[in-house]
Length: 174
Image (cartoon, rainbow, N blue to C red; front, side, top):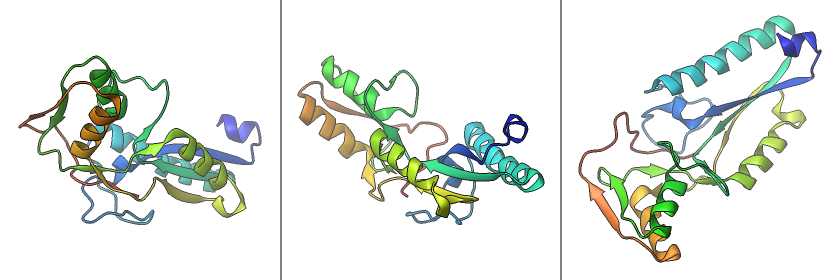
């Protein structure tokens, strides 16, 4: 409502790749079916749908960007989902870098500068009333990420915990 009252040209909505849930085969296209598995993913999908409906009703343009595992400097590694800074802080401390489940689950790790550039481009004329996946298109296993972090930072070792995290999605890629 603030956007409508301020007569903004366009609203940009930050969403997540988690709206796809366990879609059958990555890479995911923006028009693929969604099947969110967590409350967070459901809330993001509701944001998207509310944005489309409100924008149509009030004649406001929008752009939705679905980010895939963004990482970068100064990222807080205290929460689940921020696997890059969690692995890095463990390796730097010489602690074990723990991989949950098989480690074969994949993610599309996207550097923050690339995500920002994609977001700015999505706000161009072609992005009017569109949804964009923001990722690299490269699947990386969680195990190979852990091994790379340990090799590059020179500390810790990769360990595996047999039980996967709850609501784990096996594959994710833009």
